[in-house]
Image: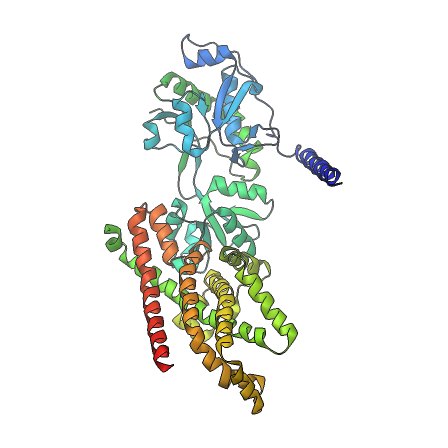
Length: 296
Length: 235
């Protein structure tokens, strides 16, 4: 009796899972056609020639960042970073289906490149000098920054200056750089600032009306806007700059130049804008024009 | 230890806010606890059951959960705890009257949780009063309320004061949790901010925070020792 009851529970659970999977499979696709694959030729011995020859490449990306790189139910990540990787692969003559994705958590991105476990890292990867000591960056291909999220029906906040009057309340994460940044704009920390350990609690406080805004990197906020459709929106412009680059192995300048050329090409031919609009752009109308690449 | 000097104002501010939180929560807990204790010894069975249920639930739920219900459950029910914005009180305790409700939510959680322990401490004090006292009071015609007010509670307080002190000391230490539920600028939140956002070393910061708590708890403990010593003389 007990066994059959457990079997019934297991069966109904499996059914529920598979039905959920069916229900969602239409919604989380990358949303864009895979780019046309080029048939290029490269100088022998370069990374490009090796990858092109092999017909496959390994890309490190985020698996948990909505809009940029988030793993779908099929196991493949989807988002803006993934689309950029596909466009680079296409220039190398590699079909989108032949890209292998590896999860690149923030803490291990340098190691992945140093240990040759990935060929490139496209993972909301902010360019900075400390990281340039260990790896090289192509790009930037996108400039993220701190932004403010408000309830969709609230037009009273237009930027960080809106907090100077002292009547608007804002939430961020404890001990985070965005929390320190916003303090400069507050009239009184104690009356205007709420800090929680995770942003989900801030989102809850925003929904409940205890705070008027949540502030952190726009990419994280876009994720929340995506997950709670129609409830929230971004207010004003981003007020700090976090340039995202594409990580390559230290010293591979030819490959870095090739990626920079590719970025400039996709800025020109519109595939960059299309990649944005089909992914993160669904929640942010400000389609980036493609920041100038930095050939250091 | 340089951090203790450099951020002295942060530590003092954190101490002051935590002290405010503790004074208000202790007051709330004593009021709630006394009330529930009276429910638990009342002659009306449903009131006794109500008091028993209150203690059973709140004494056995982790404080984090109570904090969570207070900070996220009350807003969901549409309350920002505005009844705590008491006009005279909020001029002294400025955080009480502001628009951000998390200080009030923390007071509610700490009071409600600690109230269950206060109730049991008071009840143990009441049980220490010889039954003859209450019987005699009833025999001369005092009502239940008069009996409590003039005969039982004054004696019960004496026996309950030491366990009550321990409960309040525990509450002061528990107040460190408030910094994780939206209260900005108390001792624990200041520690978090100094170590992770400003990159200060953890050990000196936590030494500073510990000193802040000790300044509140040690004198309270000494006071209790004195009270106990006096009572011993009186007996």
